[in-house]
Structures are given as C-alpha cells and as structure tokens.
Length: 629
Image 1 (tube, rainbow, N blue to C red):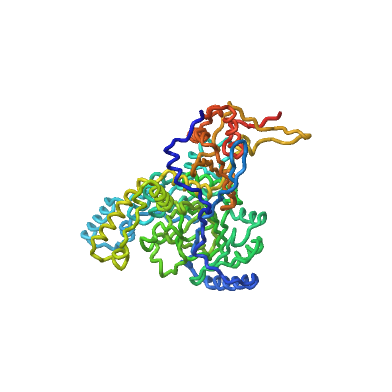
Image 2 (cartoon, helix red, strand yellow):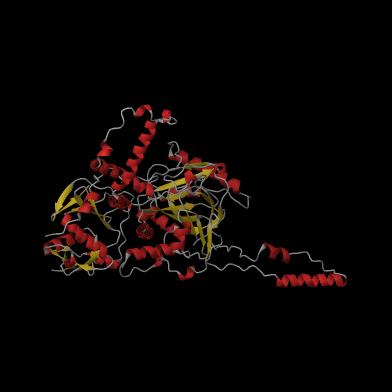
C-alpha cells in the first residue's frame, strides 16, 4: 500500500484555502510623474535644462551637486493558474585610470612633530642640549602602525564599516567562470557567489554585525573585480536588439534644483532617442537587466537561493557631472557594484525608528530633511557599497567621467511581520474551528465601557473584558500553523523567482537538451528513463511540495519568465501517496538517486512520476536521457 502524508502535516496544511489573489507587486515610489507633453517639447525642455546644468558647472571645482539614486528591485514573478488538465494521472494547474586614495602616513601628532618650526640658529650649550632632548623625544616616540589591507577602518561604534583590501586579485570572479560541468550543489554555489560579493568580509561577520544594521564600504583597489556582469556596450546592444519600452523597461531622469523628474516619452526606447537624452544630462535606468543579460540573470538567480528571497537588479548610467535621483530610502537591502567610471555617494541614517527597516520605499526628500551624511565617498570600479533598507542615500557622477553601476537588491517584504500576516489569519481560522470560547458572543453591554471614549474609565467590567481578550490571544499561539504559513510564503517567493541558468552539461541531461525529432515521419531520440536512471533536482530551491486544503501541489520555478511576474506559476497537483517520493528527492539533494529508490509500490508509478518532473525540467538525469531508436 502506498505511503500517505502524515496526518499531523495534513492538519497543519489544511487550514489554508488556496488564494486566488496575485502576489505583491513592486511599486516604484518617489517617482515624480511629469504632465503628458509631446515628446519634442519634452526633449527640448530637457536639453534647455541640461545646458543650464552644464553652464553652472563650468569653472567650478571641488564638490558637485549630489544626485539621488533610486533603487527599484526588479525580479521575476508568476501567478498561479486556476483550471486543470489531466496528464498521466496527474493534474496540471494552468492557472578612465583610477586615482589612488592617499595612504595613511601617520597620526596627527606625528605630522605635527615632523612639521615643527625648529629654529636652526641655536646659540649656547643650553639650546644644544634642548635640541638633543628634542631629537631623543622624536626617536623614542612610537609611530602609529598603519592598518594592513583587508581589515575594517572603523569599530563597532561607528555608523559605517569601511574595508580596504588588496587581496581581490586572488579571487576569481564568477562572471568570468568557464561554463564546465554542472552545478553539483546550488547551495554551495550560492554561498560562493555571496562570498565573492562581500570579499574580504567574512559572511558570518557580515550577518552578525552589518546585515540590517549598518552600511559596508569595500574599497578593493582593483578595477577589474566587478568586470563581466554588465557594461555600457551591453546596454547599447540591448537597446538595438530588444523591444525596450520607456517606463516599463527603462527610465530617463534628472534631479535639478531639488526637483526630481522623469522624462519618459511614450513608446519604444530607440537607441538614438535614449542617447540623445543621455547626451543632454539624463540618467538612464534599466529596470530589468536580468531579462536581457545572461550575466545579470546568473548573478540574481544564484543569489536568490542564498537569501531565500527575490533578488533583483537595476542598472544606472549617469552622465558626467549630473544627477538623476533625489535623496530617498528603499525597502530593500542594496548591494552597489561600481562597474565603470566614478560616483560620489552620500549615506544618511534613518531619521527615526519608524523609518528603520521600512516595508515601503520613501518619497523624495529635500536636502534640509536628511541631516548630516554618515558616509561621503567616491566609488571606483571594483568597489562595493552595501546599505540596509531605510538608509537614505543620494549619488552623483563626477564632472570628468560617466558612471555605470548595478544595484543588486533583496529582502523585500521578507520580514517576520510579513510571515505573521499569513500565520495570524490562519491561526484564527483554526481557533474558530476548534475552540468554542472564540465563538462565544461579546458581552451584551461591552460598548458601554470599551472604546476610546471609555479608555480612562475605572470599571471592573472593563478589566474583565481585557483579561478575557488577553487570555484568548495567548491561546491563539497554540493554533498557529507555522509550517503551512512558511509554505505559503515560499509560494510567494517562487512566484517572484528567476528560473535557473543551466550549464551546458545540465542542459544536455535535461528535457531542454533532448534530441527528440521527426525523421521521415518517424520520431527518434525519445526520452528513455528507466528505474535504474540516476536523477536529482536541478536546484535545491527549484521546487517545493505544498499542501493546500486536501490537495498536494508541487510548485516549481522552471517555467517562470525572466520578466518580473511575466508568467504564471504552473504547479503540479500530485496524488498524496506520491508526496514521499518527491520528499525523497528533495532530501537527497545534491546526490543522485535512482528512480527505483522512489518510495512507491509500483514500478510504473515511479517511472511516471520521474517522467513528469523530467518533462517540466524539475529534475535532470546524470547522463543524457534521450536515445536514438
């Protein structure tokens, strides 16, 4: 007899009724909409404004106006379907050269001694002795040791961690890795990617001291460290070869005189039009580079498995001496990688506790609203800047060079509170069902002593009411279906996910590499999975088994689009007795297991389940599975 899902799990999952509402969308806050104006007038206006900017900059030196830099996380998402069709007994739901920073040459005391105005016309033995004593004092004074590269320049009490490193040359960039073999363990690959991202900071220290707490600046002194992910040449190619739309895929923006404006005309972002805006002082923001860039796709899809949260990216190209965005904060954890040119950044602490780790991005701030900067720095190619959500920031390109950077973002709507939004309603549903006290009527006269007007009322009935409510709330914890709530949060995450990037070997051993074809009216190269065929999940986080009501679904990301929410999730409804076999695959990862090892009673059931998952790309075989017959 086939194994069933344990009763305990069924009761925990059974609280949930499948939601038909689409997952949360990502809003672009802080964007000032301009009135609908003919594109010619709009472009003439921006040219005129840009000339004013350039004229104002002529003859100036030193600090330049600071631009705001708006991060809008962009990733992939799908929405589950509603109808179903039968397939093999299973139901498918269709629903320029870098300038080195000056090195530390000693403490202020050392410098003051070295520059002392010592009189050279010393007269008499008294002055000679004084001079000798002075020289002895210099000789015995201990100079301050310069910090070696690769350690923090600041302690735990400072608002920003600064790290200098000259060890970046020893680290191989994942962007330059040769596509060989397969991803043996996606969790290991994801960890390596994150370690590369924050090098030389150790990941344990990052999460214990910096994550959600304070910004991190890494000056790597190696221009090529971030090479390979994206370039201005890539942007030009994307504009020429793809249907890039203003507003949907790309924005052109300015920030002048404290005013942030978006100058998007309607329609396609043709290269000549985009570069005309850029030449006249507009910043260019590419909203979904992972859709068009293989490198950015791999970067985001790998890191999403590390964070168990959507990872998106934006590309920002800023003309020399200009700025495109007002000061603001975002609702994501941001990792800024400087790719080309230089950019001057300023970071500011959240203005109050309510703005720490916010759930939503802010609007635009004026310079008077944000206080003093906790970090004022110029990023150069190879550098990294991380800052938590809620950190106010603004940035501007230097007068003598353009700036290109990528912002990698994660942890949007992924807090304990977001999880509890799912758990508390489910707990109430279960409590209503199982505890009669939750269904008892409120006191007949409770309106007489409860409510704001009665808040200061000294009435024993009020105390009894509050005691009863507190007792019920404390008992509500016993009905929280934690695992079921986590599964529903996971479904939202998978709806946002990018599909994995296959290596050449993985593609050859998956459904996408099968050589099935029609020759002279005869099908050749059919897929041939046997009970002895070794298989495994394509990625550890690529699929998840979820129970909704009395039904069991296998959610997966293999058919997700590279456009955010560009395709619907396609979960597979499976018989409950097949769930242990899928769990067996998940718990065996990253090892291969034979189809015969599936805990099912009948051989044909094992092959049917393996074929279903293979045909959806969820599993791969150890060797190419198609044969010429």
